[in-house]
Amino acid sequence: MKRALYLLPVAIFAAMALLFVKGLTMDPKAIPSVLIDRPVPEMALPPLPGRGEDTGLATRDLKGRVSLVNIYGSWCIACVQEHPYLMEYSKSGIVPIHGIDWRDDPVQGAAWLKKHGDPYDRVGVDPAPGRAAVDFGVTGAPESFIVDKNGIIRYKHIGPISPEVWNKTLLPIIRELQK
Amino acid sequence: MKWILGVLMMALATSAFAVNPDEMLKDPAQEHRARELGKDLRCLVCQNQSIDDSDADLAKDLRVIVRERIMAGDSDDQVRKFVVDRYGDYVLLTPPFKGTTLVLWVGPFVLFAGALAVVFGFYRRRRAGDAAAPVTPLSAEEKRRLEKLLKEQGQ
Image 1 (cartoon, each protein chain N blue to C red):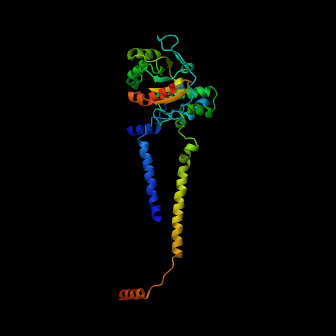
Image 2 (cartoon, each protein chain N blue to C red):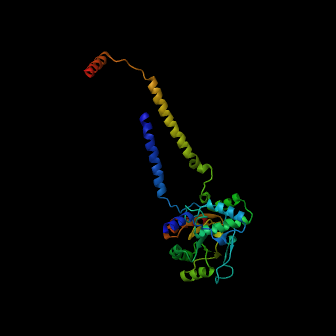
């Protein structure tokens, strides 16, 4: 019994070491969103120039169908990386993808879509200080939210969407919500 | 002479402020509140800086929005709640005292109390051990060896 007591500090050290090693492997940028299972924030964002009259993004546009809301900007480098995949998924017609052109000059935001392709159903412009993005708890671009039929945010993905993220994480959630 | 200038420059150097003049509120009292609030709000991009310190765009946006809330008449707690509602407790540089942060706040004191208990226990046991240990008299054999040793010393 006494000998076991001497081992206690070693045991405590081992437990803490395990905890810290686990901490080292976690991504400090992946902050859990507090908006999951909460309704989409109230917004009525104007459309991009040249994209048509009623193509802005408002809260009511996110009700009735499962949708994906993607935060992008013409200044955003990682957005270029995910963009071809967004084009592909948009063409597949599985889910409407809406964009929020965050902290951007709308003219440049529109030009960027001309250059790289436009996968979006609706695009809302959210210039600095990005009130809509802050309401969404956005920490950087790109970021994507899955919104269910009732306009409730169900999932948040931080960083570019890759085929792996799409097939393993986003698509199953979208399919489940579409049932 | 140069070194005097150098020392003067070092003495007068202050940390650079990230808050830009165009962001500041006209009312100094409100601006002071915004600064104090900003010091305790984490910049989500450069995570160990406050929004008051950070040059990141998102930090600037949050500074502007904090000032908007203040102008709209929010109390400090309401402003803090506004940001926490969007970014979670993580955004507070001083974590709140609640169930999930209990270990964080109370842990060090519990550990310290535990360590104190161990130290006191150790000394008390040692003292009790000194007093209570029965003194066994030397056996005949031991007495004989002791005398022999003492005699050898005496020579």
